[in-house]
Image 1 (tube, rainbow, N blue to C red):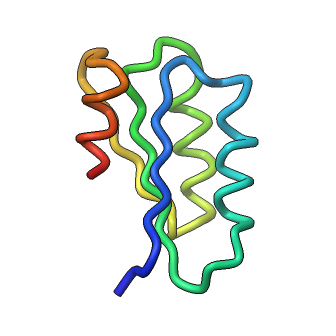
Image 2: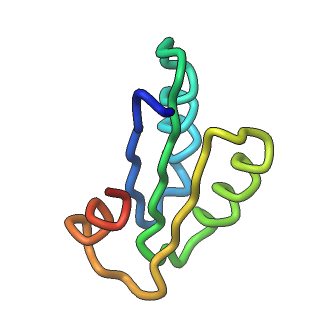
Length: 78
């Protein structure tokens, strides 16, 4: 059972998303999952996410089919 869920939402975040994920991965909680919701980015964010997630089984990527905004991205993660 996962004790801690780290939620990250993003939209067109190719410049900053790797740092956010690195910070989440480096947390020292024993049992975590990292849920990332891409709110239909139009830059390379999703490509970066899939590359990073390929190497870390704690990362779960969800992608919206259209841009729904921050509150909807949070709800998707929950």
